[in-house]
Image 1 (tube, rainbow, N blue to C red):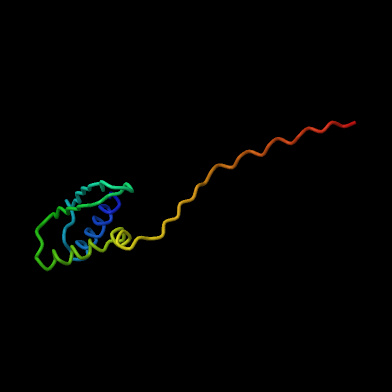
Image 2: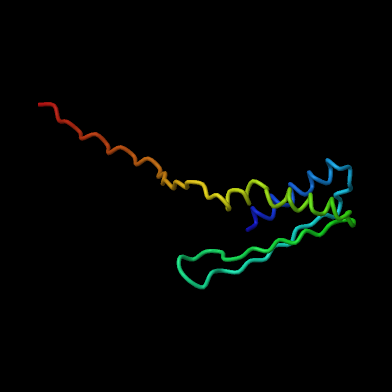
Length: 102
């Protein structure tokens, strides 16, 4: 959820800059609910962009379109293949056996 909020904020800030609009004060609030069934997962995420100034309706729509297609949102919509591996520290080699000369 935090990654999605950060990505949405990044895209919103970039949109405002591209349109020469002040982004100072831009904030993103995020809330979520968990699914009641298994597997444990987030069921809903709500993002609220707090804009530093009012936007014209056409700019509001354009900003929403940009934010709704941020990289994280796209990755949730079309899930990537996820691979999980473990990396453990190397175990020390056993000490060589002492040999006795005869």
